[in-house]
Amino acid sequence: MAIAPDKTVLVIGGGISGITAALETAEAGTKVVIVERNPYLGGRVAQLYRYFPKLCPPYCGLELNFRRIKENPSISYYTMAEVEDISGTAGNFTVKIKQKARYVNEKCTACGACVEACPVERPNDFNFGMDSTKAIYLPHDLAFPMRYVIDSAHCKGKECGKCIEACKYGAIDLDMTDKTVEINVGAIVYATGWNPYDATRMDNLSFGKVKNVITNMMMERLASQNGPTKGKILRPSDGKEVQNIAFVQCAGSRDENHLNYCSAICCMASMKQATYIREKNPESKVTIFYIDLRAPGKYEDFYRKVQSDENIRFIKGKVAKIEEDATTGDVIVTAEDVANLKRVTETFDMVVLATGMEPQTRTQSFPGGVKIEENGFILSDALPAGIFATGVATRPLDVNTSNQDATAKAIKCIQTLVGGK
Image (cartoon, rainbow, N blue to C red; front, side, top):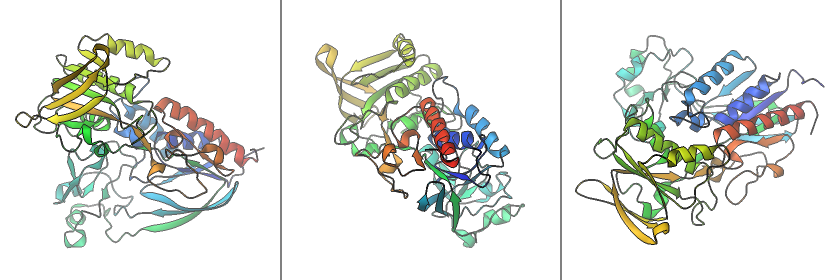
């Protein structure tokens, strides 16, 4: 059976899983609508410096996918938008979408004149607050869509209006309002992704108290050329180049007081980040405190490569506490050393917490009869017919596995549209 030309698939979430599900479905011959909360597509992958399995910059793959979206008339998208309501049944869902005002229209050429004119700054959430942008800003260098956005929480509006004066294309519209649209779709994919676990909840690890303790996603931004330090790994307190760094594994994961599951990627992420600093600073030293190391399948070879570096140490043992040397700003780590049956206290320039992956569904409810298990992951088998879930919405996954899973869910959507199960 052929897919009816008026049938549409809704993909909720514009990260790597959502983009893959959308492209695979659209390129099979059906219409797709992507709904994304952020002002850009790309999700967490857009914030990475490198990703597995090839350890290449994610912009390579993302740029290709963005081009495929741009050139495919069957794909449309709403950014700064959320699904408010879903009704109906497989093959005939009615979906209500609320889209927030961007205050910048399609005439924007991303020339940057508005930014130069804007007098107001805001914390840069893309870089986890490690630097700032103006109240009108481009989310990141290769953002898609390549269009500026105004943060209404910081913008002074018409009482300032300097961005309007600076824009010669008429792209600034401070009268723009939120809008609600209603669409009809035949199948739905939840690709709602994940958030880094809130490291402030772990008192002993002192995130937010000790200035030079950061998270693994902050480390990705520090290493990135479009990050807050232009790719130099510098510690936050004084901009000192990091020579001696520690990684703390299972920061919140495998802990019944926080995330009682293994987040799957954290060990590999820390080993990957160890290579960042070793490449950028050949004299640097790395210590990884771990409970157990997980390097599944083909990643075992990468683990052995990292392990063979004489300047990288692995210490098996939980970290008991992290403190700050008030004079130097250095970080003092007290931990177990299980192999040598002793407690160790060592000092580092900076410490990186390998915080776990928390599904978006753990902190936000979604319509459509979505049921979640105790950790917040969507129960795929309990979803209504015609609704599917993919990527980290269902369990902790790496990028490669997320893409495979999203392709499988694209096939499920197509089956639904042609009357299959």
